[in-house]
Image (cartoon, rainbow, N blue to C red):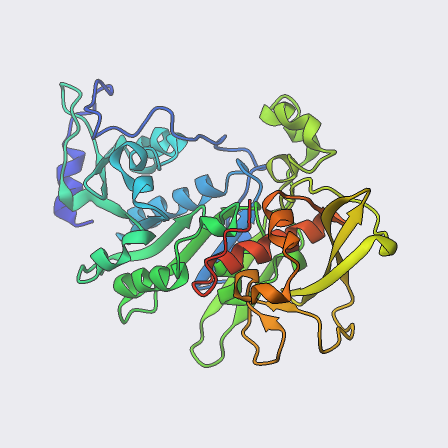
Length: 410
């Protein structure tokens, strides 16, 4: 901020906040987080890594959004470095949604953080602007006080040609989708195109990716070579590229103390601890749905094939019991000899006979006709819940594979 701007801002008369037009207002319903509660997430540890990419994952509502937003706002006030918020879809950044992205508690702290110069942040046409209010309660808009921008990954092409030389923090919220089908085709390429547009030839930009622990399988983990199941709550893992000097840090937020959840909204999720449906919300664990589990009965197997996924090997059996057909999937040792005549599904193309990237790529005369019906009707059982996660994530990713076009997935 220039001295002229600062001086100009200090001469403004502070008045109580009054009615503000819809497009100018940061919603009163913006998500809020207790300000001085040490039980909420703090940025200190991951900041100490001085990484280029900072991935923060954990339970919903643990304060990670608040912590990052406070950091980027304070960074702007100290250095003038702006932020750039990213969301996945164009619908996510419509004005009615974009005006709610800034945490309400941060808005209430602005007079203190800015020594009384500003009292709110308003959204205007893809930009966030620090404002004070005039005697009539209307925001005093000055483009020189633009603190940041917002855009969607799906329209990365439209951003090309623009310049953002003062942006040195990029924040992508909700980067993990519950289903692998929830991503944009070739999303990583679109995301990196936006990074390229903003960063240009600079090396001082920090990139933040924030997500809830809804699915350990996502294109961003794949891109950075991260295995979600190998991460432990409370730990920070790092990766480093020797050639470029790029450093990636991922923090799996520690679980909040159980006592701190008493009397909070956690009570609404107390009965999900037995089926896994509340694991992410109240404990930050990976959200694994309550897939049906049963014991394997070898005598009921009529046909088998295999799935290779994420260094795991799944053995899939078409079973029959009392005249009813179903699929039973179990995890086996990945070093198991699967023979030369069993069909193997693998997302990685393989020239070997009987290897296919999806069920839709298999000639119909090589699989039992009943198999598509079994899968479409969701008649599938597993040896454990985690196997269900492997299976459905493979199926979803094979759907996203442009070579497949498969519809066999719920």
